[in-house]
Image (cartoon, rainbow, N blue to C red; front, top):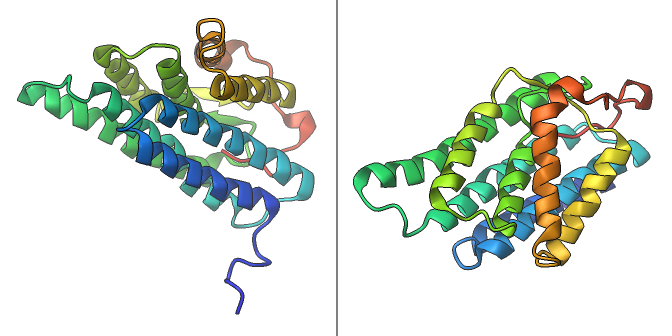
Length: 234
């Protein structure tokens, strides 16, 4: 007897589920090799972009948006929080620091869950999304680690900022296909050759992410009305 999902999931859904598996791998190896964990997070982000492309090309399924958000909880909520924990491991001495060291990553996961739930309920049919996307928050943290940003205070501070930004009222426009493709290429290069030219590609990814984070809500003209929203994923 075939599993229940046979015939009900599309190719985009299969990629989404694969992204969740990559998120698990990032979580599993974070305390052993934090850079490898960061690379898995970036690979999950590539899968997250690819599933949207496939959904638009071949059509989505009713379960797609729900699978997408569930996958993102693992890949862009739990996995980056574990990467942060790996960076600060051993640096949190004293009860107060330990509370922050555990509390901020836990809060990051909680806010990612809230953000993804709100996205699935309200934003999937819109050309803008409210709050910083979890994918952007996670990949900025992961790319930062690969770029050499490993000071525990800095990493915790950035993580704390994303805890608010993910549930903030700031509206972000969807990326145009060409810009999403550019980001995807940089993601792949940051994974394959993270140390090339002194970490050029992770640095480029952090730079692009921060530019969109700061300038996107006001200056980015990449809304997708003319391209349609069928198959949009988070």
